[in-house]
Length: 487
Image (tube, rainbow, N blue to C red; front, top):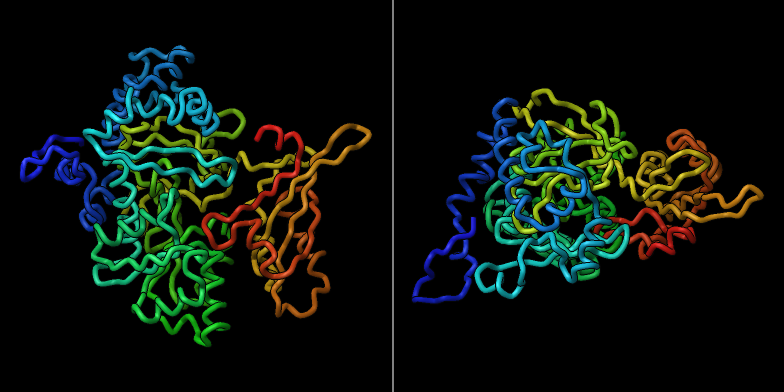
């Protein structure tokens, strides 16, 4: 998509607007309203043909990239071995550990970007540096060229449009425009693509919750994007700090990231407090908006024209049956800067439907994001994922719905053994706590398949350590010596 359009006035600077073929980009990835009525409703056969075409394009990029040449050579892959998307399983997967190793051995960005000189590249085309969230370790650098950076906002705009955001709306964004993608994606999606006024208040650290609510009432905000934990906090702050019910805003919709809310308790709680529908999304630093709910909210549609998702067994790395949980593995069609081909996100997902949705789309649908496979604790032969605690923690109204798993190791006569404490916040107005710990322990054992300890803690005590309200909540606190040595 990079082009050499001549800037006006004879300027030779790599101005963003004149470094890119915008018409070609939007022909390839239609704007939200066009997307919703065309590609989003294509037949499965037409979608597959498009994916095959774009997969072969990204493979040609991959063979020119030193990172992939080395990865594929080690696996014994030759250029003629992969002739179509049907052959994708022949390629090896890789994960964030491989990227960290690449960046460590070839600082600062590794071989994956594919260029020989950062400064030479910047002389002809703008770049944007973003990082991963760092919830499982040190944040990882990711470079975005123009195509990647524009997709970041266009993908978000598409999802918001399908969910019901329209020109004339006003959206508040309590996510800071930082090295994380989210704030930028929603801000630019609203501003650049939807005719929606973004109110970029940033996180609660940037704009206190009381002021967030005041701004919303003053600006006529009718749409929100935020994480569930902070949405609950804002509703509480509105009532306690300014004496107004948050429903007075008459919010049209909320777009959020519900995580493993498989029973719908978190969604129902937010919708009850705010008086509006809540839509779930899934995205990452590498792919942008990867999946999103439509108005029917019966699964998250993969963004099929921009990427291809597989779900692989966490141990065998082989495809799992529909309905089974596995790692999400993605190949991204729009990335040429740091191309992404069979990247194991180590996010747990489950395919819920390949049938046409009531909205008319044939895009495959996944369940809610179910947690991370590398955020796992093995207890007495059972794999326990911290995010799987959500239904249990939210099963009793006396909790705030917040929790943090603490993994530690004990020495036994048979050697070291991993254990887990689940710290659960209790509401200030909970009243009697009789039976709560017993209930939570029983429910967690039923959900997780193994007994864990539960400790009740005061409301707000987990805010800092679990990063509540400032982005992705951290659900695992590592105290295991074997894990800490790796950091």
